[in-house]
Length: 284
Figure 1: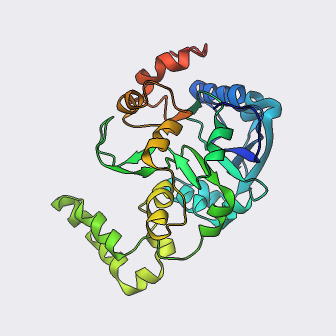
Figure 2: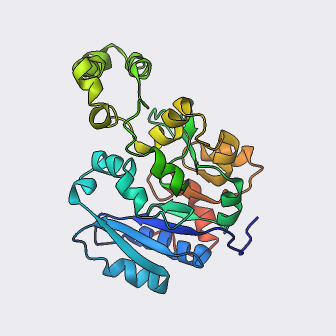
């Protein structure tokens, strides 16, 4: 593990939507440059965005930028549509894999080539049904999109496929998870999904309430078994977000390849000693 020999082409992709970086985000990018500086780094961004701060931090490791329509950067809904589109993955077809690295990710060691050799189509941290705690219980899948490795050709093949990757049984299953107040509040939305007209527009409707990483990590493998999504055990060794204390213990206290959301209020205290071990000033 940790080999510096690159046997397959890979790029690191940072999705950005604002022109300024916080001090914590600068740490994230400095760490990326320090650990994975031998790989080309690309920024995906709106058409008009000042990227001077990103250039200052990443330096010569920044290989280039790819711009998309502003509609993809207007909140989570737009982001989900972009990461489910052929347009996005077409931009990277010259690479075998892309490592998606959000500005709140942190990489601990160079294991990129090791995980590429595993041959998964998708791998990222375990994703849970969020319940407002640091330790949610209901596991959904691996593949958290904030720090994940994706096989470009496979994602391009399945993106924009207009196939039923979110079906009637899934709609009903999701609806039944809510309490009675939630069911009432969402009744018109779910009735719409079950109607014939809305069902025909599933590519524009069914995805808007689901994060793109849940679609890629749970629904695509559910209906298309050829899609190789990493199992829980490798997902937690690759990255962590929630349940970090339990997952780290389960992994014999060995740090994963990276993590996501390290400076969010809920996680900042947990990751503090590990980040400070790299010499960064944490209390900023």
